[in-house]
Length: 536
Image (cartoon, rainbow, N blue to C red; front, side):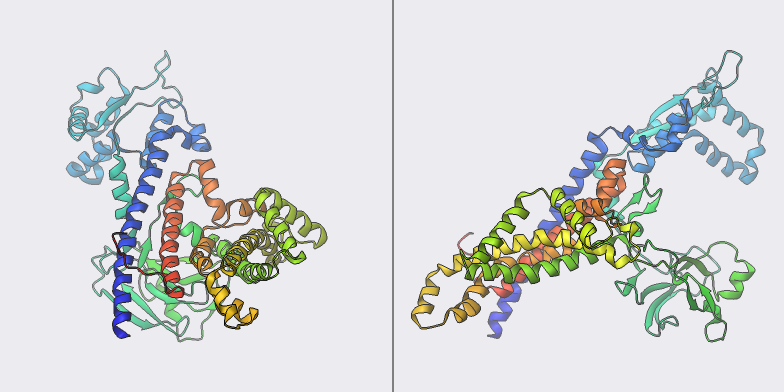
């Protein structure tokens, strides 16, 4: 018996390794394809369609702004003559370079198109960046006949180099995960650097804390989902430059969206005293302050970990989508599987015909149509809130989206459970069971149901993990502040960072759910093996 278990786990490990390697390869292909679509096949100027800054600029200033945004979005690498000039003169004269006559002359020369390219520093700039494979662009100053510069007509000298698609992919993957170490803080005065476990004064548990790391608390626990929090490892999905203006996408989807949550607590330097404050500061979020501390900071903090974020009420985008999704999924399995079994046992009865009518209705009517039907019934008959933001009692806002998600899944589970049950009912082993004298109840409970539910089991991990991705149409209709609406908003706003991040997130969950589904099926069905035989 032990040898059989050992063989099973060895073959499972081998299967999982192959699956994981194939999944990683598939993920790379998907990311590369999306990057190709977003960065190469779509006109890059679409990113300015909703950009108010771009609309307010004109002429050369608008063109230069476009190049700076192309650099932020990852389209190209940009070098500016002005920065090149500053670096040159800082190395020669230090911070007093701004008053140097040569610096002033070199800075102003690009505003004179006739003398610009005769300047020695300009020639250095061009020679250096052309040697690095950059393309030099000179935006000549635009002037009126009287010599005055036109609005936005300032001259610019820049160098650009298009980024390779594979280099962009490599940079993205290289920065996908980052780990904090004791060398994160660049402060020569900080000599005591460590990572260790200490008792957390804010919850009574233990926490992993650091000194020299960016965050003070690296791993800690609290009452907020998912209860165990990691600042030690960072998932860097990218940055949003359109809708969320420079915010990390991971922070966008995981930060609670409600009002500030004020609690009674103590500043770190006041722990153990009787001095309490009412504040929304989250002391678990403390990061190192590289600047000069104020008197208040020196009084309230024992070290330079003084920078913090605030607590918010409510759920994050990810949590909102998951709560709605998991309730809908659990409800669908609780209703769909028993009703499907009952319809199979009562095949062609009134109950089965009602069930088939529902399956046909929910499967044939467009999802947007039945969502509006359920919304109309819920708002008119039960006075449920239609839009999420309009709900005076927040918990009521979850009812309609949850029902709208659950009912189609109920129909799908009913359909497949009924079908698998009927297929099993016509099997030879059922006939033998009847011949042996087993009752219909025993046959259904001990044989048919167990075998029929095996294909359903494979979809359970996908159903659970799918709750994290949200429901695009449902969340859009009910204005749910979840992640389901994130991708459509990003596509409409041409927010490339969020588009790529959603692709990585959704694809990873799909691949993980397939692997978990296969493992789960091997547990419930002894006929399934991870071994390959006969060349198959």
